[in-house]
Length: 149
Image (cartoon, rainbow, N blue to C red; front, side, top):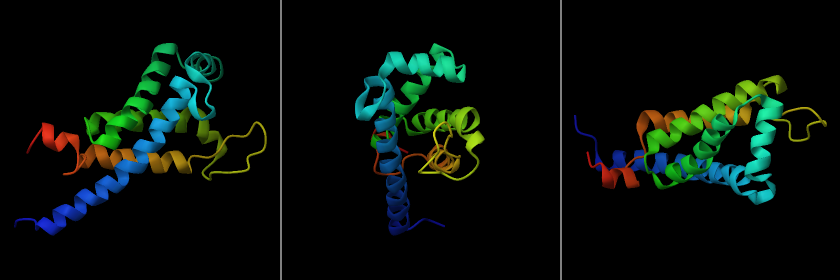
């Protein structure tokens, strides 16, 4: 049974509505780590923090920064979407495990000093990225133009 054009358009719109916020969020977070934008600490300080506080070696920190900044751009544009979303999902899985698990489930906007937020926000971002890994970017994407199917 063939899918209607309307059903395909709605599916692509839904994927776009996942891609836009996910891409913007990760471009912003990647910019903090890479460029020091939006109040971030920049590349050198990010390397130091990740190694000293989390035990993450510099090469893996670099991959996380690429996954966030580059993956954010890829997801937003729908370019190499599954690969971009995989990088984001991997970064969120590590963030949940290494940082946020200790904070429990809930995001606590007014955390006490020294306490971390829970996993709920990271889990939502992970779910969005996983959806894109399984579905791809949809019709309104660079991928669709490059890899016509």
